[in-house]
Length: 316
Image: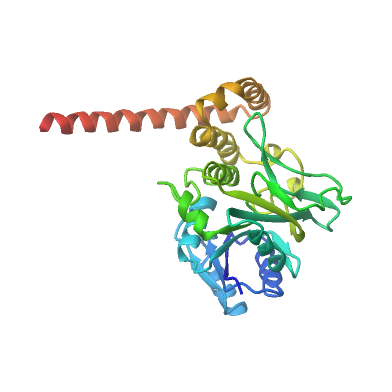
């Protein structure tokens, strides 16, 4: 029996975590451990989880570490050969783990496995795989489309949506960078595209299994109720999260794109930027102030570091 560790990051929104845990504990193939990284900053949440689910390991944070850093913490604590990173607003079919791990036996270089992610009653698709677009964003295959059986064929994909993904621990160790398994600078948004892209560059593959089904409340933990499961997420994000969404795309391009790839895709990248900044200018101009402040602070830190280095060199 393969050893699968589950890592869930939660802020304790609504009753998502309870429903998620209930679906995990009904699996035909149980996880060897369930680790919860608690970003809620509410001590009573950890006590409630332990009381209701005594087999679950809970690690409360004294501050919100956000998604990527929290997953890194959970992965470091995990013991399994495979690491199942799961959003708390996901409910799994009873045979999800049993079906999903079959993907790893197709090829020993498969490092990421995902399944068919649906919404609500299971009629609408949320994701059947992650793909890199010419404008260097993440495209969720099937996103928002009616599930009519068009993605029943399992096979290779570019990457896996971060809400429901199983990683091979060996791959995570191989692609781990100075900023962790998941880049902590990508606090949330684009972290799944980044790790999929890094895996591809290292010769690892992602695989999709249509028989592994899960149900995801898109944006359940950070969007208002009016924006849950709705397209064009940026319309429902607060200024800080919208800033993260825009900034992280640039970081992922910087981290992964080579010069030739950037040159070949420069036109679609610039076209996408025109749309993004046009939207910001007309609908959320407050974001411009945030970007200028962040950029100013960045250059201040760089200048301070440069001055410190030069002063240290003069001393010697």
